[in-house]
Image 1 (cartoon, rainbow, N blue to C red):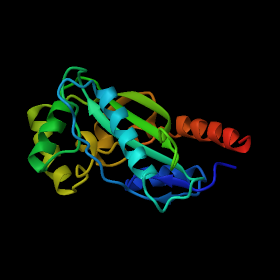
Image 2: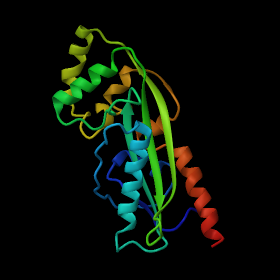
Image 3: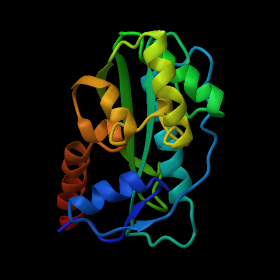
Image 4: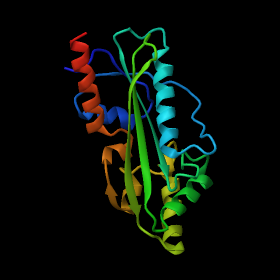
Length: 207
C-alpha cells in the first residue's frame, strides 16, 4: 500500500499513464512555474531545479490535505553540459531544427528529474532523483530527413515534447539504441519512482 492521497503535479498524460500501468491511484493537479533555463546551468541541475519548483508549487496549494504526497517531474533533452538543453520547441520550425540536430549520428541524453513534496512541510520537497538515459538516433541524410520531417511535423507529435519527440510515437523509428530507463525517456523513470514512493510508504507507516 502506497502513501495516501498521492498527487501528480503534472498535466502530462504520459506520466499519468505510467503511474496507472503500475496500479497506482492518484489525483492530477498540474501547476505552473517558471521553467526557463538559466544561462550556464548544467542540464541535470536545470531539470532537477524545475521538478523541485513544481513540487513546491503544488505543496503550497491550500486544498491539498497534509497527508498528501506530491510527485512532480520534468524532462529535458541535451547534447552537451555547457549548452542550453533542448526543451519544448517554440514552433514547427524550432521542432524541425531540433530533430535535424538529433539525427546527425550523435547520441544525446534525456534526463528526467522527480521530486516528492508534502504540503505544509518545511522545506516542502522531501526527496529528489534524476535519471539520465542515452539515446542514439539514426543518422539521416538531408534527403532522408526531408522525407521524414513534414509528415512528422504534420502529425504534431513534436508539440509539448522536450527535444521535439516522443520515443513511443512516430519518432520511435529513428531510435537505434537506448541505454538507461525507457520510461525515464517517456517522462517518468517508473522503477526508480516506485522505489522512492515505497520508501515513503514505509516512513509514513512508522510516523
